[in-house]
Image (cartoon, rainbow, N blue to C red; front, side, top):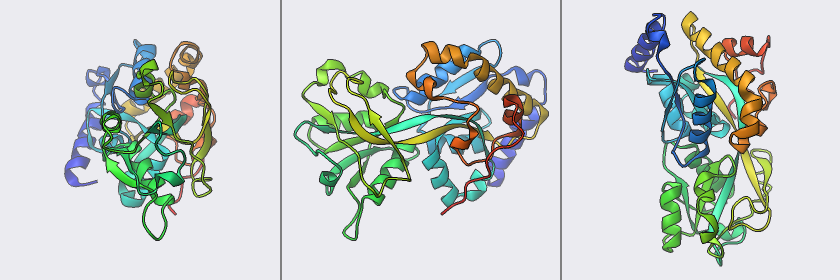
Length: 313
């Protein structure tokens, strides 16, 4: 952490020791308003109102969320993809050493959208232009990693175009790109909102390749998840987590414990009436992610230990 960021974060942590400031909203960095992170965070905000005051912030996505957990006094929590966390560990270990897990969240599916008549599988994406999201997003990280893992001596598995999913769909409709890669908990709101209008216009490209096996988890997009998608499609998924800075102050220890306790108490309600992805959340299954869990979260979950920190490869 550079001096300016460290001073800002220390000042924020110190301020939280004040009873007045401690009543302020705790910020959670999410993603685009059209994505799953934002929707889930809003449901957390509503469920915990009166217990924990949460303010939901838009962001560029996972990498941006890590930066803001690390340096933004307004942000105490962030939803992050595991592959983005591991990617950042390789490029800025001093940052990730200060990031702790609060709870494991849900799996996020990787979905590739193409025009009907376009690529039918991953091998047919070779040489094609694929929108992968904007720098700072987990979408961008996954897109780069998938392109790299599918590549060979002649280059990556496809040409990665830095473009938001929303702009990517517009470019796809105009024939300027060949596919759009999106990462998010199914159903991805942007794709869901296309409705039946997209029937016969777009499709999901099946994802299956030994080079992706193991690094990502196998998953399936069930038939009818979207009005325009009539058959089940094989794909992959990445684990997401709720993360925080490695706070030591008593005030933040208390706030983290209150948030975890609220989520634990409200989880049945969220699973019954919230976003479908809540049904995948198991707060007690800390083995999903090999990363340090904040002591305050462990205490709130009634746990004494968690998995050791993941190692870079």
